[in-house]
Image 1: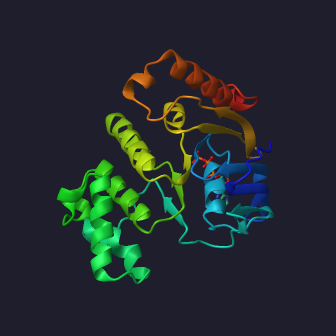
Image 2 (image 1 turned 90 degrees about the vertical axis):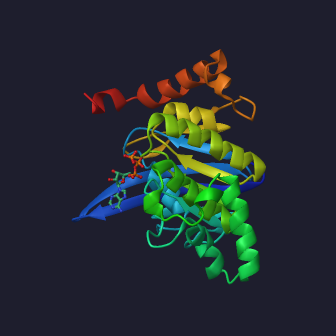
Image 3 (image 1 turned 30 degrees about the horizontal axis):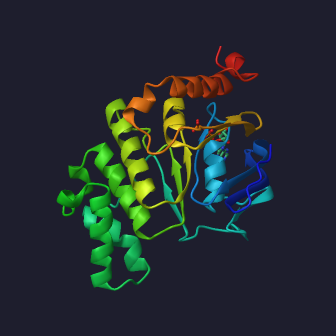
Length: 265
Ligand SMILES: Nc1ncnc2c1ncn2[C@@H]1O[C@H](COP(=O)(O)OP(=O)(O)OP(=O)(O)O)[C@@H](O)[C@H]1O
């Protein structure tokens, strides 16, 4: 399936990804074409093993595609880039560095002067509500706070794109809902192009303006569902009929696609 957007920030062009393990070749993605517009928030859902993370890793420049390519802002992705921030489920913070130092890390790499670094770090710590914890070590933070620190760190280097792979997957349900709201708040204030992989149908609908549903064996795009709920998304919206209808549509596309029910019997 191809979606054509005029000013695509991320463009998957007929992407094919094979993996060879102990002599056997497995096609993780086949013929994936998708445009994600500048400033768009897209979520990707689908059954386990359908290639969601593979797609995200390809956009992050962590894979060498077997066929096709991924373009970012009309340039072919051929490795990790400072224009792209990646956030995984595992918080990946440096345990020996304070929250401040974790957020500052990428800025030091970019050789930003100390005074400016401090300003940037203060800004993003405030944005994610971690100002009071600037001098804490990651082990002193809850899971949600660690992930907010990771988000601040990703934002601090000012990437145009945020690739998020199940970033809230390890959090309890309440924290997760809170984090979704906070992420949208951050995104509304400082708009970035976001591709967000999740297993959670509710999460996919709440966050996105468009949900991409994938199918497995081989991994491919099965359906796109436009989420025509306005931003800012509110708690009441989660309980609305419109939300319920969209959730049902995504649920149907994820769990009632050919082959999924049989695979889980
Ligand atoms: N580096 C790799 N080497 C071999 N096989 C891989 C590799 N990465 C992914 N795969 C396989 O490719 C398929 C797609 O994996 P991927 O992690 O992208 O799926 P996913 O949709 O993100 O899955 P899940 O929802 O379970 O996290 C899986 O069958 C996986 O085992």
